[in-house]
Every structure is written in C-alpha cells, then in structure tokens.
Image (cartoon, rainbow, N blue to C red):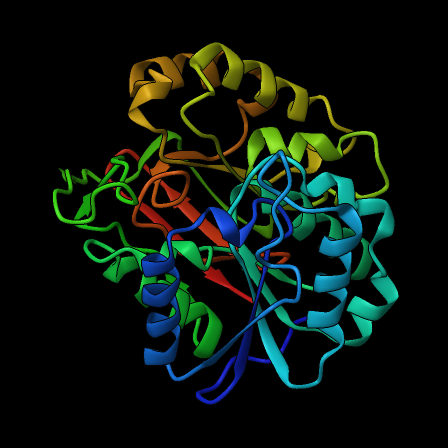
Length: 324
C-alpha cells in the first residue's frame, strides 16, 4: 500500500515515539520547522511531543495516542519522528493497525523508528520511510543531499537513482553547527558482485532484530535488506547481529544486502567488513554493497520500507535505484 505523495500546503505532524522533543534545543526546533516550511509544508506537533520522563521519553499510552491521532487526523498528510532512542518496541502491542491501514500516510524517521516502520509494513502492507528525523532537518551545513532525497522520495513520482554524496560527516553537528568536520566520500563499493531486484526491508540492524520471533517481523521473501548500525556496534557486535538476521526463516529468499555507512567510533573498516561478509555462507550467492549513504552519519537518503530496489554491483561500479 503506497501512501499519497506529499504536496506543498500539506500538514506534517511531529511525533515522539522514542525520545522526547524536550531533549532538542529550541533553536533546532525552530530551524527544523523553518526547513519544512521552506519545502511548502505546515507543521504541527503532537499533544505529548514534549512529554519527558526519566528515560527522556514518555509513557507508552502518550506515544500511542499521538501516533494514532496523527494517522486519524484528516488534516495530517505526513508524519515525522522527533529522534531515535531505545523504546519504540514498547508500542507494538498497542498499535491499531486497522486504523493505520485505513488512513495511509507517510511516516518517516530512522534508528529506533525501524521497529515501527517494519512492523507497520508487516501488519498492513503500508510503505513507510527510513529517512531524516524532524531534528535532522535542523542541520545548517552539509544537509542539502538529505533534503534533496527527502523531497524526491516524498513529493516526486519518478524512480530515484541513489548517487553518492560528495562529502560525509560523523561529527556531533548538533553540539557545534559551525565547526563541522567533513570527509570526501569515495562512494559505495561491492563486496559481492551481482544484480538483484526486490522489496526493501530493514533500517537499523540491532533494532530490526528486536522484531525477530514476533508477529511484527516482515517477510524476507524477495527482500533487499538495508542495514546499518551506530557507533556502539563494533565489528563483533555487527557480526553477531547480522548472523542473527541470517538465521531468520526465509532468509534463503533474500535477494541482496545493502549496508549503510558506519560511524568512525564503531572501528569498522572495509577490510574487516569484507572478512565478516566473506565468512557468511548464507551470503555467498548474494550481491552485497557497502558504504551507502544511510546510517547514523550525514548526509542520508530516504528509502521506502516495503518499496522496491534494484542493485547492480561490480568491482567497477555500484548502482542503486529505489522506487515505491
């Protein structure tokens, strides 16, 4: 199920299903709001967006109320999450999937939001979107790529060819917006060559794995898996988390693996990643590409969970095309 494209004049609702909007500096909230308004949208905030408990989140009931309200409100056309965190999976049993399916809208975020995106797709067939949080849009410098691909996926009808950004960054931009550290982007590379078409599943790997063994885990049939992880995922952690996914029922029907960009603090290198991938017999027949522009770095592109991807991978060139 594909939700309607966003248009200028549409209302975007900001919800906090993980961490609270209360942890975001007011100047960043203003900047992100202005960015969405520059796209032509109007912005509204959920009733409990600022609610903040001892875990920098809010009650499960408050988060469910806000999500359901955003989907049921006919004025709202798109939904953006505030930030990631650790506890979106607390909401799963309380989600009204019938309400969500009856009011299909574009839900976008990443990191901990991975559980909502994949669960909603698994239970309703509604395509969801892994892309910038509301807070991401407050970034002053180096965010043009993120904005461009957000607009392409959310507002335009054409298939999207994913090209590498010229630069990338792994700095704490939200602490110092003016003294950014950027690196040249060498672009994605192929670990295993090949061609594949399939359905996009995934997002943050360790968060996706929280769905294993539940009714909320999407089917891996004909899937192209998109996975990334943050600085806490050292090579050994990534190896273990990836292996857990490889053990999932239906993995033999996966078509390709697309790996995002690792943060420097993860200590992952291309050489280590290649050795991990090459050690997996389950991956020997699959195209595998890495260092793609998504993850806990910037900039990132927006991709549709439940949408389509085409991967062409060779030593000379990597091509990635996504569509709904």
